[in-house]
Length: 122
Image 1 (cartoon, helix red, strand yellow):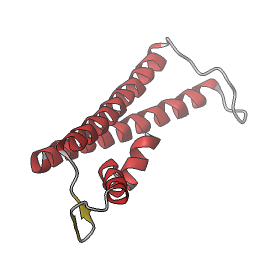
Image 2 (cartoon, one colour):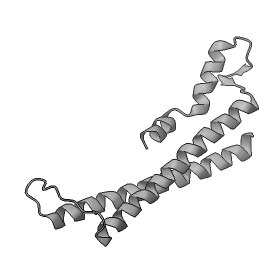
Image 3 (cartoon, rainbow, N blue to C red):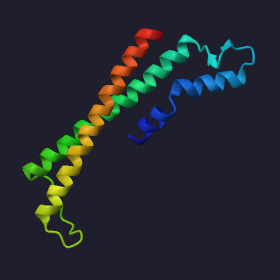
Image 4 (cartoon, rainbow, N blue to C red):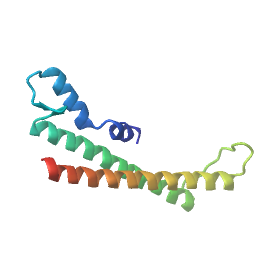
């Protein structure tokens, strides 16, 4: 999830464009737009899609942990700040549900964005 946040702040395409601009002084530059090759565009698309699919799977795994805790297959045994096991379980389940929702929404938006960008540029 941290990796996707980093690439949301500075997209992989922008990083490659900056590297291309620094390496190739003859690159076509129109108001800081550097044209990159189709192979690099496809590589960027594959890397981004892989990250978002992994993020989506991590969200599903987070929900699977919730079902394991609710089913009694996993449990929280540590006492934290003198809370009982029910409170710790409720807190853990709440955190996992919120985390799963955020990851799945982030992954879905990222996948849709990458598909639309591929339609536009590749």
